[in-house]
Image (tube, rainbow, N blue to C red; front, side):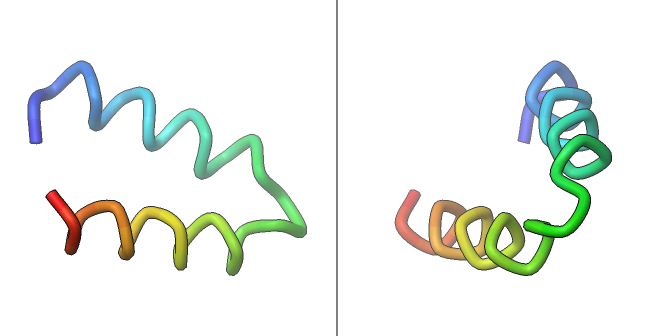
Length: 34
């Protein structure tokens, strides 16, 4: 994963708050499909 995407994912990870489990499922599915 390119570094600029890592920083974007980290920013979203921090911003999600209570929706974090849904975000982690979305990211996991995205990584598996690419």
